[in-house]
Image (cartoon, rainbow, N blue to C red; front, side, top):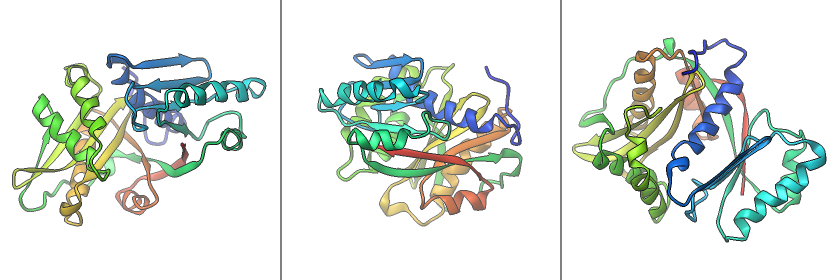
Length: 266
């Protein structure tokens, strides 16, 4: 286990990206039929599912003389299978003109997110909205509820999300799993989800989601706080996340500070 990182450590930014990379690969490594190509300078994850949530290229640290050939090979891997995928460019990606090279290979910058970190000692207390209870997923039924909420981010709901978590449940729920899944139930209905991946000395927050009809009630805020408070209780001092433009203000008010940008190319 990596030592807990202090919020002011100069290693927080690199740990933030390493945590994200670990989050993208941990369950995929156990998925039958998945391919994880972990090579110097580049990591490719092919889940075997036609879903760019789980098909990713990341952790690019490419030498300039080889960059175009390796980009072409990674892009061809998915295009030859007609599989969607996402290429994530983190704050320490190389070469420095990687974005331009990805564009030249036909990829489009679909989203930009702000990497952020937080001192967990600054967390406020958790106040649950009326009718809401939060459970940590410790069995397949609750993990399925988590997956259903996440899948509902798409319209129609993405069935590949349900498939992925069903097929990796034995690893996701194992006692030594670094991932904690949380589900919010409003009057007994699963309406919100979040997860925390504990790796590289930081607690990475992911998959914060609330179904449409339960939004604007403080439920998303509760599902943000619950995994962070859980991580703090376990000794973690620093949390990290990648925030969309819509979420940056919310996380800033909570105490998160910028640590660099992440770009998603498709």
